[in-house]
Amino acid sequence: MPTTRTRPVRDRFEDSEALRALLNRLHNAGRGAWRTDPDAAALMRHAAQKYAALAKKHSLDPWEAASAAFEAMRGAATRRADDPWAVVTRAVKVTCIGEERGNGLLCSVHQARRPRYSVFHDAERFSDRENPLTDYHPAFHIAPFTDTDVDKADADGPGQMVDVGSAVEDTIALLGLLRWRPETARAAVEYVTARLALAPSRASAFEVLRRDRQARALLDLPAASWRGLLRVVLGAPDPQLAHTNAGRGVLLRLLIGEPLRALLADDDLVLAASVAAPGLDPGPEGR
Image (cartoon, rainbow, N blue to C red):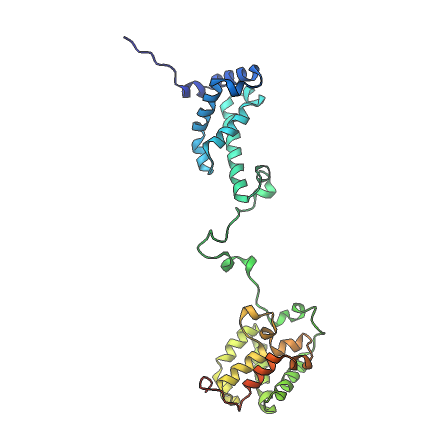
């Protein structure tokens, strides 16, 4: 007995003219035809299978691609096109790309399709990378505070800028008031400022001077006094303290207009300079 084969659903819908005929019939049937017609349901299942790979490529569900195909099939341009499936495929591709960009940019598909939004990269979470974003992204970096930034770092500071010579003399006077011998204070401050003038920043000058054993020998200063002097005059090198009084140091604070009496009212500064004065017992670490 000969067997007959019915035409598979896939082959029935793959033909463009068959698709056109079905779309015209659904259109002429009026409202509700897409919901009740069994061929419409079969067509949507076929569309989900047909565009499943395209949807997966753009990290979407196959039925999201089928939904885009449904919207394209309802248009008059699809029914009148030379190749209806080509129109549907192009519409599904554009929609999938827009959906993917919208999900990446955390915006609507309508915005993601616009060039002024689509040029941006996808949004990133801090936990998406092995290294924290703050370690390498320039938006989270703060340029080191150098002496060339003095004129703009504290525009709202307490006073006007003063010349370097006056700042040096006031620094020497401050140390003299805080148990430093005048001749030692002058020699040390002048040496520090001379090396500072040759360095690209206060932080680099601090590191060079901290390891300068010859300077310590010439000034006859113990290690604790030398380190304490550098912290008082140049400020702490810690970047987190760069914009604090401890990080600026006496010399910079004088340069940005702080008066000497204001520095003498800073208890932390007075204590640090007094403890660093040579002649006091530096303890075992400073010997």
